[in-house]
Amino acid sequence: MASFYLKNGGRTRDILAYLWSRLPMKTIICLLILLLPLGNTAYASNGFEKVQCGADISKALIGQRTSNERVVAIEARHKALGLKDLGVDIISDHLSSVNWLICGTEYILLEDNIVRDVLPYFEDGRLRPLVDKVFGFDDLPAAIEFMESDAQVGKIVVRV
Image (tube, rainbow, N blue to C red):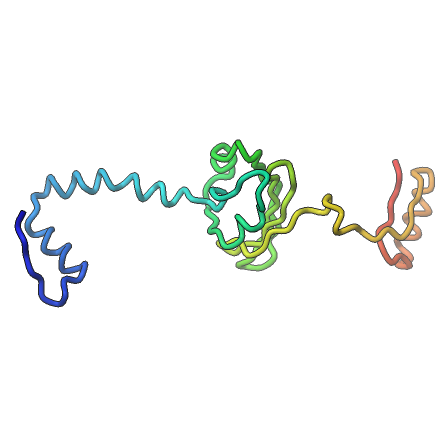
């Protein structure tokens, strides 16, 4: 094995230039072809790799990078999580609220290419809507009148 010394402390740029000038072109092309799939694998990362059912899902997702990969591909890769995209709300140019079904529970992810916060959806009982008045379906005109009066403080429910 030949040894060599590079001035400037052997910076990566200098080492690559040295190798480029010494290696045959066939060897360089073969190395690039072999390394190309590694770049694709890194791109396929989408933040759900650390998630496990039964573990703290919020903790596993916060700080993870998100990708622009097709949702169908992400859902297929994470079938064990029961992953299902439930829609997106765009909050601003850089911030989105993404709803996912993960391990049978619905979560809201606030993300801007990085997951900033993860909240379990309302069904966990911590957040409940404030119901002002409940109407039967037969009282629909009265419910509409009450809504148009702007007298309600919470939600108006019509039982069907």
